Image (tube, rainbow, N blue to C red; front, side):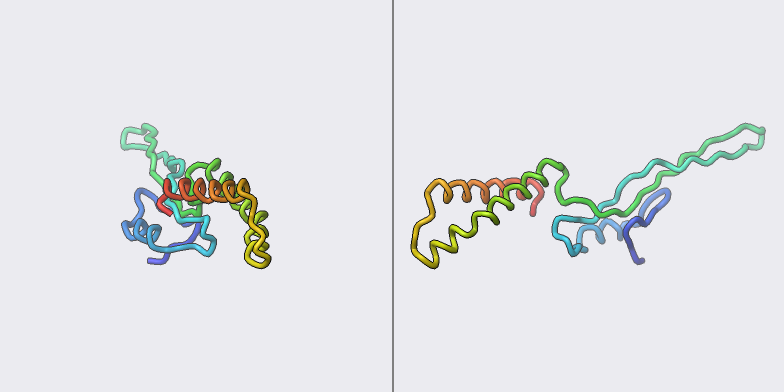
Length: 125
């Protein structure tokens, strides 16, 4: 069976979908596949006695979502990575000129890398 984004399943989803979500990577490493539960579909029918009977059909949708369950974690990783990107020039300068990077910059960069690693470890990345 082929799976695609925003595909909807009623009542239940196939077991192959779970494996698909685990094994298929997306182009953007910050995204993952997820099976999202939707509002159930409400169907009304009339029983043999003329009563209105409501039936609720569970529905699920295949979506792409952030690898982070917590939006704050995602934003924090972006913020820390931006800091590392903006201070990369210190390492380049040290490599080319042998002028050492200030200790406080080295320590802050290491702290940023450590925090990124800790956040990613929560999500087994």
